[in-house]
Every structure is written in structure tokens, then in C-alpha cells.
Length: 93
Image 1 (cartoon, rainbow, N blue to C red):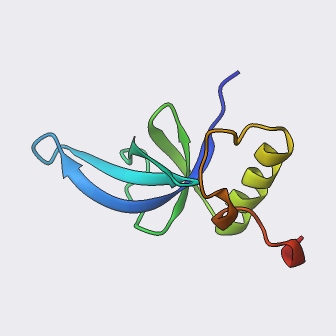
Image 2 (cartoon, rainbow, N blue to C red):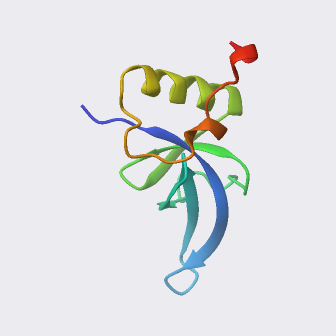
């Protein structure tokens, strides 16, 4: 089974002679590149679901935090750093 993971767009740049819009996306402190070709309206600060290096949909911050909370509960955040910024605060639950 493949999983799309939410991340926050930190920067956007055009690559390959301006043909592809790429983002640096933070996943709990780990930053990876993702294509924004499917999301031409995505901007810095947006949360996106990324699957195999492609941002496939935008999600709101609340949904992203719920997903991170679920991934934490099932033990799938082991390699991520600084996940506290993505997880809901105790008083938000």
C-alpha cells in the first residue's frame, strides 16, 4: 500500500529551464522536493499531500495535523524530526 504524507511548502522554484514547478516540502523537519505540476495554485505555507514526489492535493493545516497525529499513533514517524510543530497541541484535541 502506498501512502501520501502531508507536508508544508517551504519554498517554490522553477526547474528544468522553467518547465517544472518544484517545491521544498517539510515533513516534520525533513525537507524533500516535490513536483507541483498537479497543483498550480499551491503556494508557500500551504499544506499538501505528497505521494512519490508529487503533490497531489492541498489540505488544510487541521487535516495535516490530524494525519500526523495518526501516523504518530501507529509508529510511522520514526525518521521524522521536529514533528511537534505538526502535531496538535494537547489542548487542541
